[in-house]
Image 1: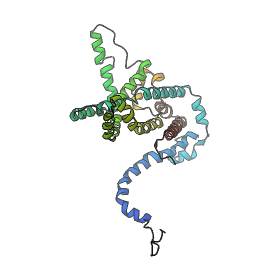
Image 2: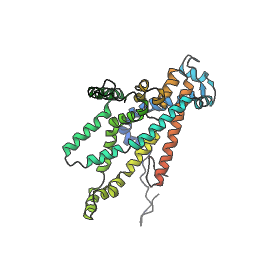
Image 3: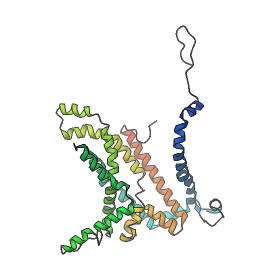
Length: 323
């Protein structure tokens, strides 16, 4: 009930019921229904399969997959115990964390730098051309990306032929396990740096140009405007993407590594994604593979919640509003 108006009876507030909102929004709900069903069937329903991590799963224990789940022996944390005793798991985890740290230092800042450089280009046509060229590799598959690097840097590639023609021995780039982390980071930069650049260009476009004009009128140079206007304007986007990257930290890729695993060896190219495949699918130790996948998801959840809490400490919203 609202406050009674002077000299009159109290009026009711006009509150829409759920039926009214459904009648109003049913076209929007109908539009998102296919996407909702897609996520439900291919993401949330398969999550129920994590029960395999706590079973000695036998796919032949029943006539149907559901019966196999029901009749497989429950062993609690036995799969996790076997997982943590496996040296190859720790090798995969070590490679995954090393690659994460390397890419956070040398790959994550690159889209920001590319966006700043491209934003300084005055010609709109030249800016659009560069943006299209840098963004195009994002649509290439990892098979095409690895093949391209093989043609350019492999033992029979362009670089090796030029070095041989000059009378020298070509370096081992595609088969050197010591520099494999640099190779895969370079491939990720070439493929996906343009995608991140687009996001930061959109954030740069949202900064009020009058702030730059006022700073220039006060005598601020280019670097001072960059430090006091541009970077603070990008801070919320940078923190949000960093949180999402940490949440996806242990998902460093599957196709990229499995395509190059034989060339550099398991010690250099084994990551958690390939470990789950070879241990859970190839060797058919489904319980240990599921335990490794569940461990990876738990670590990602802890990282994203921690990073989001730190974002709240710096006054940013993060991925959800602080209550």
